[in-house]
View 1 (cartoon, one colour):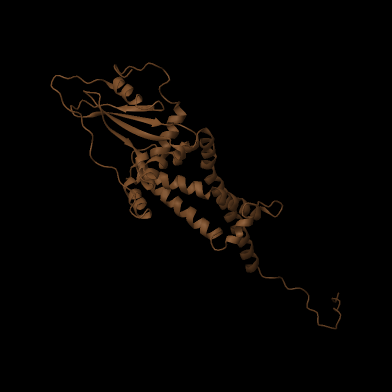
View 2: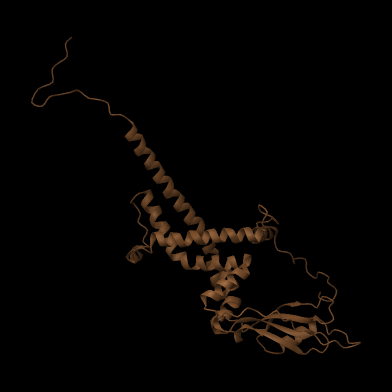
Length: 299
């Protein structure tokens, strides 16, 4: 209940396993990893993974684009090494673009200011960083706040497609506004057709809309950063279909690691065999001159 703060339902908390996995994903389930915040440690791991992806793509495909024609063919019956090699190359090529997208958007959680700088450089300065100016309410002597529910009703009255996610309260400040964060035009692949998140600032005394933060008014680079990074990272940009595909995508690095490790072990085993053969001296056999018959041994 937003007025009393009482919990009205018993299932407000996620299942314990989901909670543990969420904590592990966002901060390694720890406040410090080798002196680093959990999210920063994950950010550095994501940078290492990005280097692995880019270097792997260069090693297998970039020197010769002709390899792409048969890159997704997995040959069976050609030995263990060949099968693992084909599997590694096929999975790597098919998942390269989405894995890079998920990795880059994930790095943004740990290093947002640095990623913003990179976006600004890549887009040749067309990215506009958000303004630091905050909308304020007009103080009125004796006036009482209208409340969160009234602020939500004011925001939803602006457009029939508005779906409120949450409301930022004033926190007891006399000049703060209610921040109504909502989604507009929720549709499949809506990022292309108009779906976006907005934030409506409502004066806590008069109920007037002070400002509307709508990234649809931004240029392409700015909107791509603010509106696309999170949905691309989570797979929410295409609804349930892409979210399920992103679950499979999250398992593919394990396939790449398994196939790559298996290839390394097969090669290591072959090298050891060759080294063993080269170090083992050949036993001399009976010496026979050309054109002569071997002589029988004397009793």
